[in-house]
Length: 77
Image 1 (cartoon, rainbow, N blue to C red):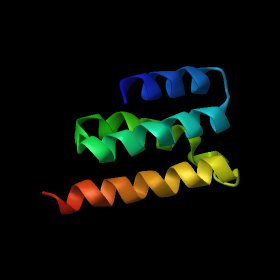
Image 2: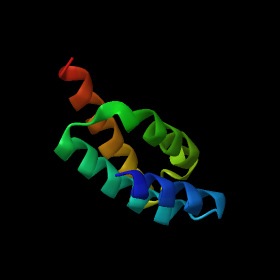
Image 3: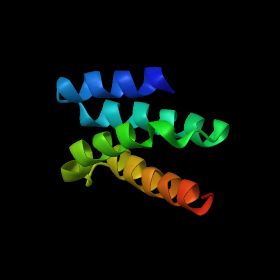
Image 4: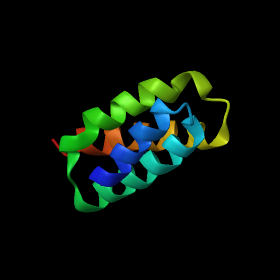
């Protein structure tokens, strides 16, 4: 999970929002599987960084999955 967010941030720094979105989406899947919401703010940062490219399918898929993950953890409180 940590490696995916770090790699996503590195891709964002290089301007590759599609790769960043794909990696972050993989990290979200692991975070949901292990039910560890502590890293959610980092994924929020990634979501904010890619939001303006939401016409790209990979970015849109990440944003949708991020919203779903956020709802999932909110319902567990």
